[in-house]
Image (cartoon, rainbow, N blue to C red; front, side, top):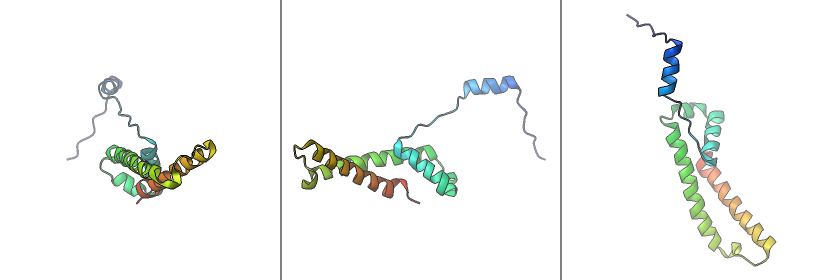
Length: 112
């Protein structure tokens, strides 16, 4: 025999919402981009993930670690050393950031 679902009263719903507030997960830049990408381009994988928040927080952590390692490595490269010329230094810094961003997006965020 099938059991019928219990119908809740308004008071029960209000009490449940007080005792079980919704959990709002906040992701960083790359976790948010990964979530949007999966929702739009690979919804089957998105729904197949067992623990979406853990996966997206992992994306953020991995991106942060990659950023730190690559920035350290590229800032030691002679092509990106500071010159004392403000505009040239800004250009070099922006190039470093652009390279790191591209690597993170291609290797961590937009993968299937």
